[in-house]
Image (cartoon, rainbow, N blue to C red; front, side):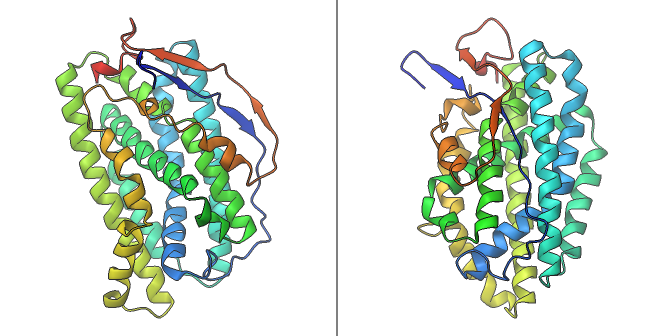
Length: 301
């Protein structure tokens, strides 16, 4: 963001990406490290059901959005559909490699079923918060260039592709949430998103840790052994959780907008890990604060 308080959203691109369905990843496909591999595997389980649910939550607001946001929502839906499809293929490869994912899938099903019982505003608030978590984790993944360089080639491709697109569309759900809450006061918006983010983060950490413990148990690790290793992996010196902490905490600022953190430079870095064509489908969005429309006035949050 410049001194004039201007920030930019990148072009959302269309990419043709397919995970190799014949791939069965090694048990510890990320540099032979079972702990960090278990994090990525646990996270991958979320995407087929989770991405489909996020699409459900965003789609009802598309008809109320203006031309630009409506186009962004359409591209968000397309990208999220592809993420769910390709991670389903990846997860089948993990099962073929010997992992039982049923307990992890059941946790995701329970979360999604619970959120489906909420009203539309609660669902889009939840989705917006999870998308922020996903975006800051994606940014942390791509910033640590050595991390995915240790991965098996096909795993590096899918995680780099997914991280790039999560960064690319990271403002869409926030802007949709601004539309959905346009009649709310700034204080109500800030309190709602802050409380929801705290709850969502607690659930995310709990479910990822329990998923990792489950997968490591299948590798012969006890919970007593795995939990300290998981915590160190997440929040140690090179941990993804530690790396993402600053960007995650920015969400709690009054006036926050995702593109106040400009991490566009990570997109070409991630794209270099896969060779698929990318074609622009939208024009760049420029958001200036203050702006006349509540969707673009980040300070209203």
